[in-house]
Amino acid sequence: MEVTLVVNITISGHPGSGTSTLVEGICRAKNWTSLNGGQIFRTEAKNRGMSLSEFGDLCKLDSSVDESLDEILKNSMKDPAGPEVMESRLSGWWAYKIGLDCARIWLNVNDEERARRVVAREEISYQQALENNRLRSKKDLDRYMTMYGLNPEDSEPYTHIIEASEIGADQVLLKALEILEEYK
Image 1 (cartoon, helix red, strand yellow):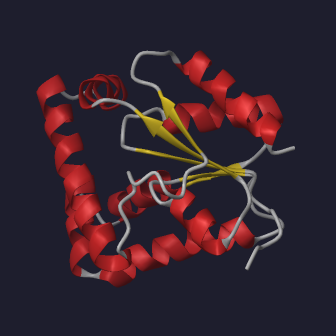
Image 2 (cartoon, helix red, strand yellow; image 1 turned 60 degrees about the horizontal axis):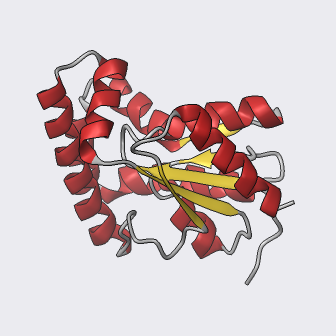
């Protein structure tokens, strides 16, 4: 069943892959709005006084927490007043499962580059960023597989994969804007 296009593009990738930077660029270029699943996750962790890792553990123990966050994203994708850009680890999967004919991009960035980017954003050591990223990715994969049988890195739902380890944010944005031209 195909649903009327509401969201124009989904952006997914590992922590530190540049999804937030890309979304900001698309929104500026197109004068669009966005919803960031990672920010919803971080805000909820902070509201509960938990680290991202601890909150990930809670989500693993109590699937209703994670499911409620995912429902916010899915409902926003179908809302005519919702954002044009959706960003989360599973936003591409949700758009695919819902039947939205939109661009679904996965940003692929190697572990080392992602850690360097997280260091700049979160002011932690490189080794800590590398370990945090690996731990979070493993926990998230385990959780998504248990809850939904989904691997965020599986290419099935994505219309495009941008290899972004060795190119800058401006080049990634140009590639994404070119992809959006295909969906006019």
